[in-house]
Amino acid sequence: MKNAELIGMTREEMVELLLALGEPRFRGRQLYHALYQERKFDLSRITSFPKKLRARLAEQFRATLPEVERVFHSADGTVRYLLRLADGKEIEAVYMPEEGRPGKLRRTLCISTQAGCAVDCKFCLTGVMGFLRNVSAGEIVGQVLRLCQENRWPAGEKLNLVFMGMGEPLLNYDHVLAAVRLLADPDGIGISTARQTLSTAGVVPGIQRLGAEPVRPKLAISLNAPTDAVRDRIMPINRKWPIAELLRACREFPLRPREKLTFEYVLLEGVNDFLDDARKLARLVRPLPAKVNLIGLNPGPELPFHTPSDAIVLAFQRELKKSGVPAFIRKPRGRDIFAACGQLKLAQESALAAAP
Image (cartoon, rainbow, N blue to C red; front, side, top):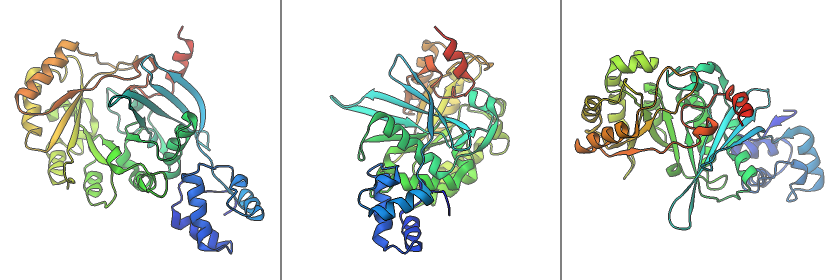
């Protein structure tokens, strides 16, 4: 257990760890509280422990967070973090502040669940990177704790989490759900699952498994096309789990009271943005308790698609609403720093660094 990583361990795991050192159970609970509530990552400074135990913990264990390599600030207030993991792999996380209720700032963190991505959606820059590795539960939790530390947010700060950064969360299922449980624990970090959203490209077995979880985030599905022909072209995952199979999993997904599914729809000029596409989309999702978020393509230099005009996006929204589907246009955040949905790609940092 020499140099074992503590971030990512549950309370019971920490209790067992301290018991193995000959300490009483309450010491494990103290350690859990010190790390996740008090944010004391220097083990030698956990003053609730005797000096001898502090020294022993500091010698045998570590509590490390991803290191901040670079920070990019957008004109709209969005902040993009390039983070380095312990093995040198890099991922990205994004902080998006926006005005909420009068006098209240809504804080949303976009968290990565993989380094790179294997799903290869053709409108997403992350897919260009390919897949490097899964991110551990501790590294997922560590992204949240690092951004809290960077912004000096105390325990109990009202944060919203979206697992929409790099990677497909449901292809890293066990680590992501372990992180969700840790993040949601009111005795730990304390971010309610009502404030957590997991976005999937449509991994049907993962959706089915997620529905059976006693503790889970809300579900968002990246749909992006009303027909298999178009979705096959822009989302290769559709060839494995086509639209009919995906929507069947959505119909069977056990929603909580007042909970709705979210369908994300990235509009690509001349590909999936026709009014007839909107009508077909409405027929697909109208029977479900769901809403649709419309996102005009966030452009990138290696993407073979273009962003439709605002007029086309508005017309698409009107057609959905006319068909009885709640539809919302998501304002792009952080486009100027490649922080918007579908833009996270590590190689962009050099382009940004060279920009005036």
